[in-house]
Structures are given as C-alpha cells and as structure tokens.
Image (cartoon, rainbow, N blue to C red; front, side, top):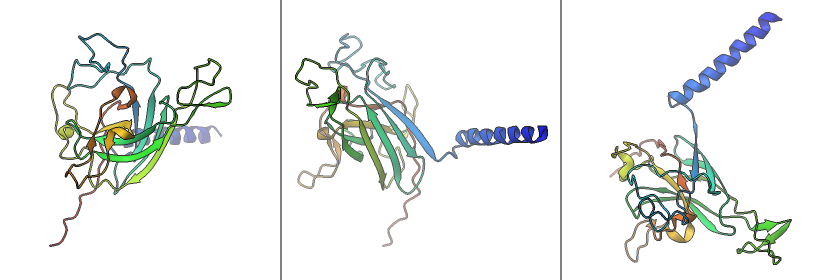
Length: 231
C-alpha cells in the first residue's frame, strides 16, 4: 500500500513537471490574456495624464493598470493553428453597449487591424429589475450590475500575430517587447472591413479609451506559412 501511494505521488509530480515544461518550451496549446481599463478621466494631472486620463509618460512602454477601475476581461486563445480560436469574457462594462474585440497593429490608426468578434453587453439590473442605460430604476437607486460580455470565435486571420506590418513585429525601445496588442473597443469606433469607395483598409475611426479594455501584455500567435498561389 505504501509503495502504491509513493508511486501515485511520483506520477503526479511527473505530470505537473511535464505541464510546466510544456509551458516553458512553448508547447502549451492555449494562452490566456487579461485586459484592463487603463484610462480614467478622473486622472487629471497634466504632467502625467492626457485629457482622456491616459498616461503620457513612457509612451513606448506599457501603460499601468489602475486597480480601482472595475472594467476588465479575460481572453483564452490557441497559440497556433490555421484559425485563431478564442473565448472572451468581459465584466463591468457599460450596459447594453456594442463592443468589438480587435487585434490592433501599431501605429495609429491601426491600419489593417483585424476584428475578431463583436457582441453587446448585458442590461443593467438592480434587485431583480432590468434598468435602462442610465442605470436608474426610477426610485433614485443608481447602483446596478450588468455590463457583462461574452464573445467566442474561430477566425481565419491569415497571418501570425504580430503581423509583419505591425510596428511591434520588431523590438522597439525602451521596452524591447515583440507581440500583438488585443483591444476591446466600441464597435462604432472601428471600421472592420475595407471600404472600396475611399480605398480605406480596416482601422480605428474614433478614440474613446476610457470605455476600452487594453491588453495586460503582448501576445504571440503562430499561423502556418501560407502557400503561394500558383501562377
């Protein structure tokens, strides 16, 4: 019996060690990314924040996360494959609002960005009552819940991430980071398809960062090489 217990402990240890090694060697099949609000209009120090409450120091480095902000999201995605498979969950967002999850290539306005999926956040509610967009139930109670969002996708993006046309494809000072930015933005602020009338490519149309979620860190996705089209 004692030998059996020792054998089981050893097998568990080897299994855990194998999983850790798989992550370290890049063999893990699923990645996880958290997204957070990084701009807040209440942050008004002009030496540190712009008019949107976004950091202006360290423009080429990662923006800090403000822990008091209640908006956040989690993205699970495959690290490699013919398609970009993902599952996204957002919490604390404005209720009944249309959002789009995008891959954003630097620089602004993110020309040739990729829209991964869209959805509408859940309505606000209080004490079992659904509320309007104002968040009030007519009795002076502005406290509400809602603003949840779930987006799932299996998208043929035709490229690895970051794409070669992304400024983050090569190391950039001072961070030296290489990877792709994943944002959750208002659907009305992004053009997802090319527009033949003005020859424009997918890009950001507006900038309302206090209502967006930004990546905690850059990600990498590997797409197999695309075979050339026979002539």
